[in-house]
Image (tube, rainbow, N blue to C red; front, top):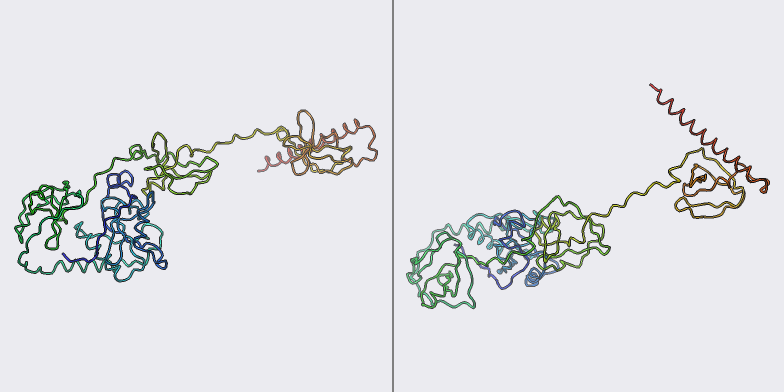
Length: 462
């Protein structure tokens, strides 16, 4: 196996990931690594720092993460590969790929470490893994990363593995096992994982065979012949030099209890679009902690596509289509969403029900005339005697006849109008009223007959 030169850092752990056990329910597919997505961690001109990026991706209640942060000769594992980190911007990318954040300077040393990492991943999984970049899953500026360069470095290391192996050197004494600071929980990777007796070097003898995915609790380790062997408490206490090669083990964490929001989650696309109802808007919450994801407020009236509902602590939350697609544990309080109240249609006002079209005509006020609003009947203004007004329609309100003025927002009683200017304003008002009412009636009749003639002519047309 070709030698790689980078150092692994495992002292950082990001809380921002989807545990392996929940990947199928959150992403709709199982966690199966088929490749690595390579990213860069920001603008290269800002000279971002390795440990600053690690701390950012390990922040509480974050909305992004990666499995690995890497640069020249060092990588930091912050999410175990068995889990799904939030890095690809798509459910498929998160479920099927390991995310690697690279120093954006992208010099030859950074590429060498990426190539070595990809080689080690392919040796670990025993297959060729895809090399992808972030822009293949979502719109981003991670485009300068050269996938071909990473592949060439990985392939060159695979080629070294095919060279004839040198003859084994005389064996060295096997050191005693060194106790670990604290026990490490592993799981076996192979169907026949062997526990080796290292004192039989160079051809070790297997003293026991473990099945695949069996739990192995390491209490101590032996570093020997460029390999690390993990030792159980029993073997350490008995001073036996028996151990399992670290290459045959994978770190294992017992699955935490299923979060309440996942236990109660029900997908239902029929919910459809819901609107934000409160005047102050609403916030998106992390359903694992019920804390706000950020300070942003979704304003009132915003429509959101909903695909699921769940409950946490007796409170109901809706899960959006976007959150499901991204595989994020985000939700919105159900009490802040709903269908907007439908305002009942207003009944047609009386003046509009009784509206009659007439030929537009000018009239004069025969006295000080109150001009009324069609909306509420309030007096808008008083037009003095002999004021010229333009009339377009006739109507009736509470049994009284009115004329509708140009603009359709105001009316005036027929009692106040004359079809000619008033020469003697103090003549008998009642006679003039009867005359003007008869005149308006004739206008309505003439207009109605004209409409009937046009309609009759149109219906007889072949």
